[in-house]
Image 1 (tube, one colour):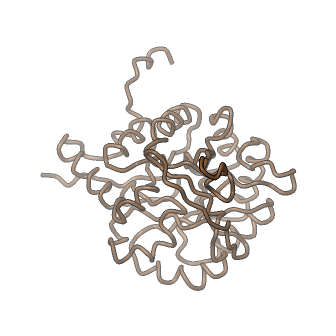
Image 2 (cartoon, helix red, strand yellow):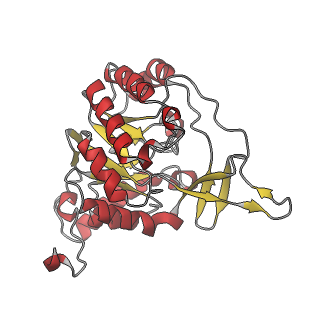
Amino acid sequence: MVTPDLSVALGPLRLKNPVLTASGTFGYGLEFTPFLDLAELGGIVVKGLSPRPRRGNPPDRIFETPSGMLNAIGLQNVGVDAFISDKLPALGKYDTAVVANVFGETVAEYVEVCAKLDAAPGVAAIELNVSCPNVEAGGIAFGSDPVLLEKVTRACRDASRLPLFVKLSPNVTDIRVTARAAEGGGADAISLVNTYVGMAVDVERRRPVLHNVSGGLSGPAIRPLAVWATWQVSRAVKIPLVGMGGILTARDALEFILAGASAVQIGTANFIHPDAAVRVARGLAAYLSEHGIASVRELVGTLKTGREKAR
């Protein structure tokens, strides 16, 4: 039996398999080494990095929902300098791509972090979290304004030679518009989707469960929405896509791949099974073998909707 080829390309970045871990759900990768071999993953996307350390929001910050979870962690992180000096060297021991997730409150903060990562050995790519509010624009999220999104993408593209992904928020009127803005700004790939905004209420106290009032909804509850967004964006841009949103199994991942994603990220599932991403990668290999498919790339965007002739 021929071993299936799981390798994929996200612009200039080559991955040995299409399974990565999602930012904010896998720490800096090192925390999970007791539970899995990082080398079995195509890559890991570390916690979002800011110019300086952030403490995040006070508790309560996480709440379990039907088939999902709400989180309002508040982008707690050690800061880009500590990541480069304390985390990145240890990650270099593992044969997997390290993708640094980046956020800021101004374009200048995004650029500052990207420039530092560009000079750091061992970073394979940068992923921009554009769901953050731009304090210079009255608090509007970078990802909800196509003009602002293209501007921050272009600034980061100019600041770094590394492959650049843009992680889109689904909390917009038409995600195809923001996807085109990211592509226009020079993104090499698009990650989608980030969490949906949600809220939970404690009916006894008549107060929000989360200290922050609202939080990001993730997990299997959002998977059909995320697959739909992936399919829409796949028809709107020419650059590769990384799909995510409630993936627990290889078959879940295949939904995104068939809908047009070249790779996937595993997020909430990491809280259920610390080795969830490895299980998905192994499951994809098994699926290809069972169906006599030589390469996972043969499946990307092959969804049959019955509308193909009308395009």
